[in-house]
Length: 387
Image (cartoon, rainbow, N blue to C red; front, top):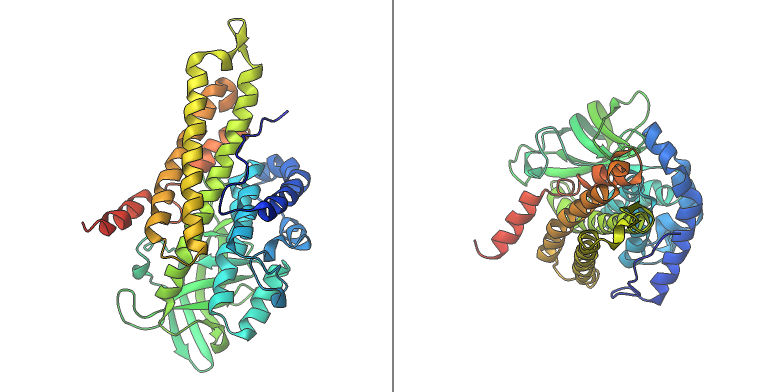
């Protein structure tokens, strides 16, 4: 029997959100968790996951009802993100969240009504799966160095370039892609286009092998003379940097809350194990060194969660929470990586065998890299100190 860490309802969440949590947790335990090991071995999870989540309304939690959503907000979406991460597969969680939390929000926030009908509505129904395509071989945290170009032609644009490390990159039906639309250097001259991924239009996607997140579809994307119609320009021409910055904070919060939920699950599994595994005639959890390790892990997890929820509250309230989000992204990912490592250690040889504990460590290693590296977070925080 699993041991659940006691936390109760923590602000900014309310009883309403906890009721939603119970519903999502039931769905996850029934429909997803039993299949995770197979999907991890296959290095792919089926699109049926999106369809089932859509049937329950989970893909549209924070979108208006007029587009098929549930009329909620980011707090409802945060609950979904957390509970998905309790499957023990960060790859599964991030694959779903990359669609609903990275690709769809820019279409809703910056898109025309026509774009919302063509991409947001079917996206909420899981009839189309989206991917956010920003990172390139030579442009990661340095988004101003994006080289993918869109040349203006009659009726639209011709796009050439490459993207890499794109979650949902292979399965995506469309990409919300950052491109250069003028020769202006730096942050200027960058725009976003919605690029359809259809056979024969010049888009090719190649799956990438990774240390962790195995069932997550991560791809390298090549655009070769791809025609994109004028009506697929997302937001203002040459105003793409604003769009990137708008989505960064939510992306970092999503990664943070997912990592914390995954770490909590790891501790719960480890608690079960140390209460049952015996050495020298008694459960290993009774040894002071192990008891203190778990006490430290639980304490650090609580600190990370409290910090994350404070940053989330500020973000939802409309504050400029860039510094707080950067701090929690920096702090929580290392905490969660350390917790995952300690869980392996407490399991001993069993923790090194393929399974949720071993997978938890591999998955957690991307935390200090994805969505903004530790180094970038420290730079943002350091500059806020006037340095």
